[in-house]
Length: 170
Image 1 (cartoon, helix red, strand yellow):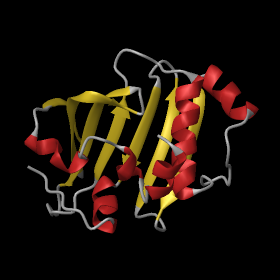
Image 2 (cartoon, helix red, strand yellow):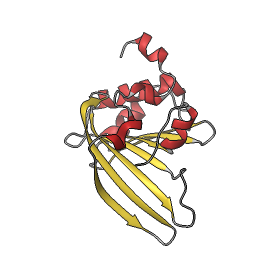
Image 3 (cartoon, helix red, strand yellow):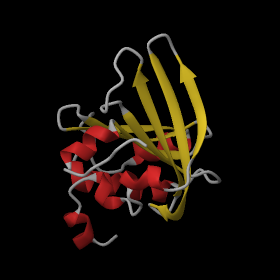
Image 4 (cartoon, one colour):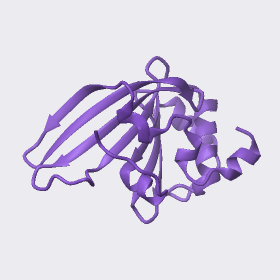
């Protein structure tokens, strides 16, 4: 992505080629579910045709249903991940730089990639988080344990509302 393109990105969704709002119109599968006394959570997964950020080949939607009030505003979290690779420090640095170009410093007021980030990646203890619109949504980038690099959008449904796009659960 060149510098002119980065300047045009207004939110993280502008950086993702796959239109996440079309997830339930494509082929996907249920990969997990969990029930607690108050909620029911289902995880759906889809293989991507094109790698996002030159790394992620899979997208997961984690949907939470409140048993007391089933509404259209059930929290939806999105996770991009690479099924067969952990990724490289350069890939992670590029993702961080892209997010910084849109949202600025993360929640800990940390900006550009540094030696501390490099060390955290090597130790597989990397985590950075950005809060969007006073907690309406969150973006986290992690490389923890052996799961590799992941990019998560928490409260994706709220981010969609902020961008005036449409998204509906199937």
